[in-house]
Length: 231
Length: 310
Image (cartoon, rainbow over all chains, first blue to last red; front, side, top):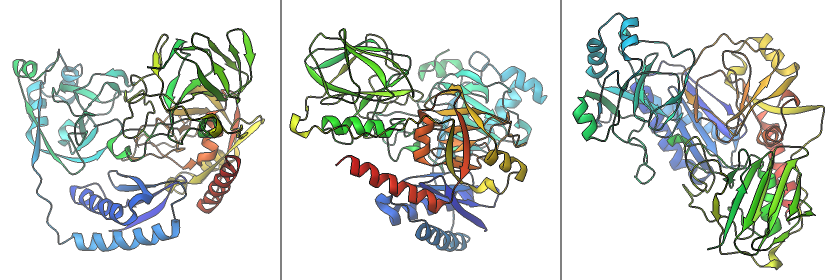
């Protein structure tokens, strides 16, 4: 696998694989992230996995560029060579209940129309297969899940909503996600999930992590309400 | 409990310290003072440690009253200060008696001023920081911008007078016709059209009023990348993000942790601070620098600051 290494601003380094996103690539990035954490210890203040990238943030004045570049080069190469033979970690699938209903999903009916299918067909497709968690971020607890069935591929709203409620289940391009907190957002809302995905009092604070397998399960209004969902 | 009541909170005041480390992977912005030098200066004056928080005030217009006598100092963007009706100087320790009122007027230049009170603000730290991240609703007094009549608890451990320091004279506000922002080119520097990079490097841009703790939008010749969105990846402080409309946004302390717009490079931290204090209408230009130059600048400024804080 080929990759590039370069600066991301004045305190971070970025490694990017020239490869389409895949669970295999994400698992490699996670392994590289853990290895970097063990190696750089406190010099590394944070690290973030993207679809095809790993960004390493260093505490100010502790980034030694040549050393980091050489280490990344060597480690990324040996891990990507070794990874071919490793089996995927078996992780349990997180099941998230979703109330698919126009009462909580302003885009559900129009989107089904746009895609030329019934609302039932859309929700059945969305909840049919487990998704892979490619990245977290954008907002606390937000997790980019893929890959959506190509029949559900849809552009973002041309003007993002100022206010997307917490729990909104949404899709854009070939990704899906649940908005953990109220925020602005341009993805199409097709349902609502009553489960809390981000809680400062919990450990870890986010329910979902990169590398997780996530499946959506349709629930009715009564179940949605009993799980704390609001209309 | 000692408290400070904000009779008038100003338009965008928040409790800030140096910010959080190690929360980006959880989607939580680092936050922290937009002008860390002004934060440090106030901490130094009052003998505070580097983790103590201040109230960051954008464009002044704050009125505050303490429950008990306290020492305070205001740093950053220079504003007219009044204790009751008497004018007092910036960057100089003042005593505010219980029931007296401190008024911070609009600053004559710059944007962010910092109100430090001896003993600090005793709000609940989240991930080892009291910094407010309003978008996430984390930190500060109640997770958001301070509001009129908010009462902020003060810390008990006011440092003794013999730990007070002189004003270190650190300043991030520059009066220049053109403010130069040095930036480290990133991977898209070579992927974007050479003509676009040339415009980025040679043309002048203007700070717009679409500027806040998340990012500062610039106006200039539109930089049309033709790229709607890329695979999401981590953003860094100072990243020059170019959305489809072609107006670059320099990402600041409360930036979204992931992004998918083209980023030709990232402004070095020390120039991010100058940009943070630059008002709408300020002309800026970008100047590419090598990562090694960026490191040298960081070391030099670190030593300069350390010397001033001695």
